[in-house]
Image (cartoon, rainbow, N blue to C red; front, side):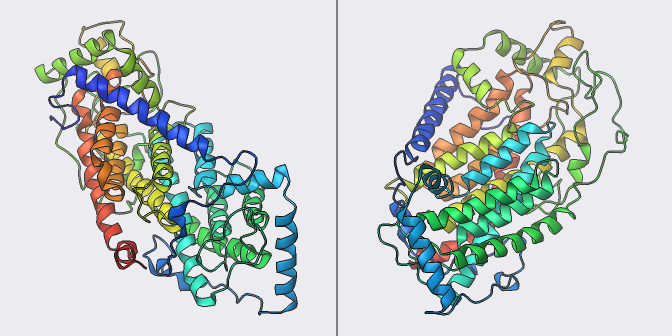
Length: 509
């Protein structure tokens, strides 16, 4: 199969694409570095200052409706508790310390999901390599934060509590009501989900992190103790919904060790990399429940070229030649998208780059109000949910065909008995590329969010897919995952167009 990623682009164009990608990543990193406050808190981004009175009615992912998570009324105006809350936040905001400033900066950035994204990226890098499990977990954490924010907004506009009146707050309060705190809600949800997904990590550490996120809003002068306490409780309740959901998605299933009918052993089918006896990585992931697809096989492509066929021999020869003629630009793309054991894996790389895109959008004149806090959190949920289904779809295809990896085929076909790829061969079949499928899914979502940059996202996705051939771990045909991912991304986009956020933006609400 010939795809747009690999069809007729000349080598020079591919090298330029890789170089352009590196420049974009460097630029995004520079933007991220500039967002730190240095000596003091940075002011809120201008794009954040548009109110979102309708965000509490946006469609949620798991929570059936924001109203099912009950939030107790705030302290009454002029009550003893209200007076104590105001005195506390004024006292803390008026006496900043390096430690309090660090908390305000960490949890109050322009992409408010970042501390929690960084945490799940770290947890993924500490566990055994399992790409579909990583993308599942990225989606669960980010969708939980989104549902927590929507739920917080539902209650904000029912109680309509103004932010505390604080002289010279570290961060300008937003235009929406302050009770309950959205930052605390995100923290409560993310900590609860992460503790369930990674039980080997310290749950106490996560709860302490959530408490720090809540406390940071007092230091910032934007929320009272009652605001953040209500937000934490709300977020933890939302997190419990996601923990229950995660227990029913099929991810607990294990492979029975049997290959399906028609799939044998030997060079015609996937075998572990030469010199190893490792089992395949999580074939059961092909059976998990998707978020938006009707079934894991919804976008399954036709079979790859059979082993020993002229087509496969030509593809294997192309991989061999690419390995021998690797350019510095191609090597940088290979390294950037490698996603090897001990890293955040390919979906984590895509999530990080998408986060940098959002940071650039918040600080861009092109934003036009699209990236308020609820919309930024929504964007990360859309990208990660698309990648979760991309992982399931890729694994369905991989374990339908069990196609051999280039390292095995190049040796078994006698093309080069000593061939080794640039990065280690993954322990799962070649067709289709999971990395390409993630790239296509993210491209579709990001192009919906930033249509003026669609060409950039497309070229970047194509470079990511092509990097797997340059790395020596995929054939050109494996980039069929790009179109699969794009189709999945379009399902997410279709849902996004009807979730209420676009209608609010169009109405100026």
